[in-house]
Length: 185
Image (cartoon, rainbow, N blue to C red; front, side, top):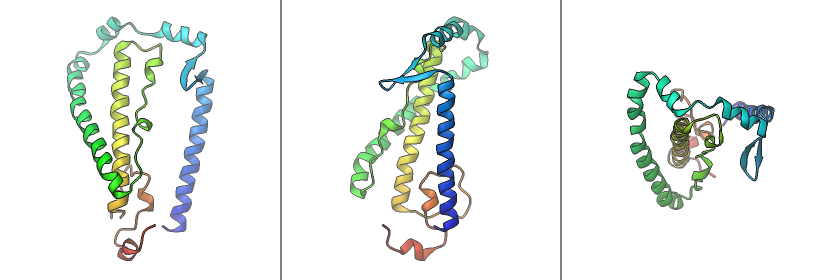
């Protein structure tokens, strides 16, 4: 990897840390705290959240008909999601020890905390859990796939990759056979 690419990668990491610090400030402004690892709101904020909750029956009655009609299509994805989760988890459990690839901790990718939000009704909480699972699963699978690619084929593509995993920047350049065949650490 060239010095310029390494410098840019470091700048990206610094910007990500800066972004996380700003998000933490914003959370503090919303008076959200953590107590023993759990989200906690001040009582006044919690009371206001409850006032803003839309009742389940009103939420359903206010929904557009097409939104209601396509809901089964959205929720039908749970079947391939669960199968993907199962297969990727088994793949990692069997193959990663053989390859010497570090285990991906599943719990780091699945975050279910929106049910603490008092301004959400039961269906909104279910929708949030579904999206948390789907997006957590995609991130988990991406990490496993990225580590696998790093092990087997750490070569950049000839074309630009949109949304590349964090290991990609350190891959060998496309067409650099000498670098690919050189011993890896």
